[in-house]
Length: 59
Image 1 (cartoon, rainbow, N blue to C red):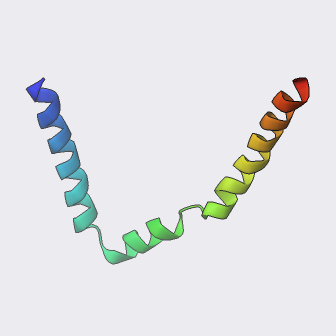
Image 2: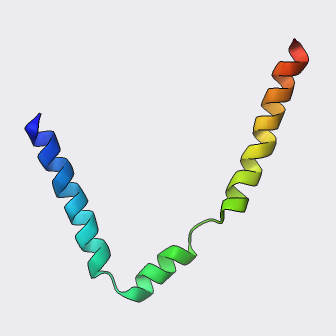
C-alpha cells in the first residue's frame, strides 16, 4: 500500500519538475493548442438533448 503512495508522489514530482523546466515558448504553445470550451460543449449539448428527448418521447 505504501509503495503506491510513493509512486504517486514520484509521478507528480516528475510532472511538476518537467513543467517547471519547460521554456516559456513550449508552455505558450501547449496553452494555444487547447480546445476552447465552446467547441467542446456545443457538441455535447445537442447530444444530451437528443438523448433526453428520445427517452421523454418513449414515455
